Length: 106
Image 1 (cartoon, rainbow, N blue to C red):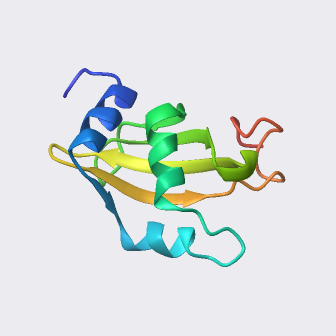
Image 2 (image 1 turned 45 degrees about the horizontal axis):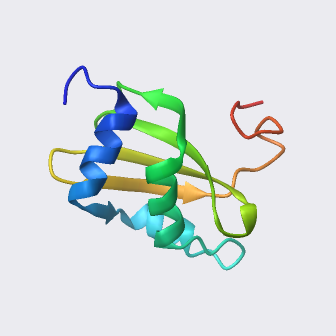
């Protein structure tokens, strides 16, 4: 996997298994956002990398942007491992902290 673009690593790992870390589950379960695993997995398959964190202490990871149910923009932070994709968190981006297209931090 070394040298392979992060998005290819993410999608390869996701084909094996997707593991939701506790923080991610908590963030997805907030009553004001309720992000489903189906939404997260759709973003993993079809989303775009907007930030890459190759030096993350937890291992290389990235921030994906995609569209969830009802057309809402969602961010997913994930880290590809040898035999699974770790979903670190998923959230609805705050328009006050992100550009209008949710691709750049303000």
